Amino acid sequence: MMPSDEYKQYLALVRAALADAPADDWPKTADALLALTEAGEPTERDADLLELMSHAFQRGEDLQQAFPHFYQRLQRNPALREAFLEILDMMEHEDE
Image 1: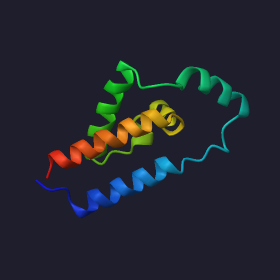
Image 2: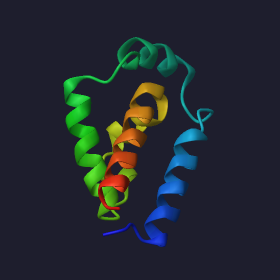
Image 3: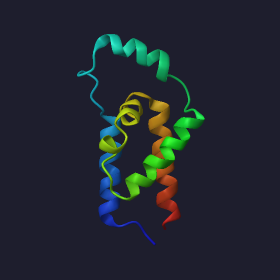
């Protein structure tokens, strides 16, 4: 089953939103805390959440609403964003 054009457009929008995530509405003191707690490669727990989130994405769920805390973390952690996009790419190729 090939991904629909609507799915491909939605995927492009999500990729663009993650790439351009705004950071100016975040308290400056929170940046230091996030740098300490969210830096580095995704953990095993992150991998589980990324898998859940990717399946929710395929179902068309609002990821920010379904995973509010993890979605914020995803926006602020480049390694997590890259892992999420890689999962979506793999899922897209499985459907082809």
